[in-house]
Length: 417
Ligand code: HGY
Ligand code: MN
Ligand code: MN
Image (cartoon, rainbow, N blue to C red; front, side, top):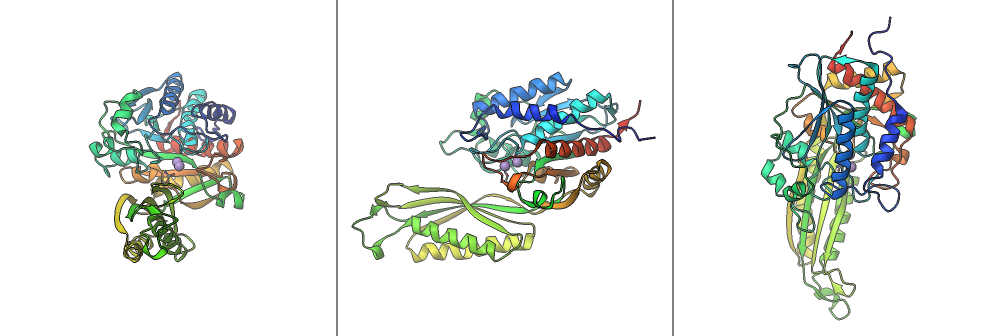
């Protein structure tokens, strides 16, 4: 006789329809999404999620950073809830599935438990974390970082975007500043379903990634100051060219990462040169550096080498130099019991799977510091993400959500009738 819930499956068509409907909010210019955090489009997506979750019988709580929590009661009101979710905010040229699959997959878990009439001892809480991407307001995973005690609330509320808009004011403007104290909620466990955002699962023909670890990262910002001057008349050796300094530091970042293959990565993603005029030598350059590795010693060695060599490049070009750390977390080891629940679910369901390290940061990376946490990955086409062409298949989404359903139900403890 099958154990209660052993053959549970989610409704993959319903999940896919929800993904498609959410994707119509904040459409990009090339088929993806531009639903950046705390924009009107984010507010609209939040309202849609709220309506769906309330239709599924859940009650909403919102904290001071706008993170949304939807509770499905358990049979034991004193049991700590199992939280499950991800983020609805996207990159400016983001895909339809990064984060969104994890939030709507969590909703599908509850919808399926409702359909199956299955109760769990622990409550289940569907979660949408505010500002995971960190594209508009740095750093990434801002709300989950405050929730886990890594950042102060007031520091987060005071973050500004490139136009000077303030996080707390934007949160109020879209009507999503709640009154719950950030981090007051206690968790029995947290699970996050996410696309891999890399090429491994698809290349190996695997349905599921059992995420055992997440790489650590350093986010830094460098400002170089030279002198605006005429590109036609200023002698080459008299120039103080901040753009040239940025180019040489870009090469340095690449060389540092290449020096620690196969796992380390490094790039400069956001650049601003001033005055950004075709016939003026840039007198100022401001740019962000993203260094990552699953190995803490390597990660810190990369940062050290950058901090040693970048100022020398600036000095050689007679440039002013300043560096600011804008984000950091050490490599993450997820909770063994939760990871086993994911792996056992994939086994039980007959899905091919492999252990995998997350290259991207996720809210789960922070929440893992305060509660037992694990992630489920599904493949994505060509491993492409943070690109409007990001794509997954209905089957991949369904398999990932089936595994999420089983891992969450097992951890929340099914109460047979
Ligand atoms: O940057 C990251 O790794 C995540 O996608 N925010
Ligand atoms: Mn994400
Ligand atoms: Mn992302």
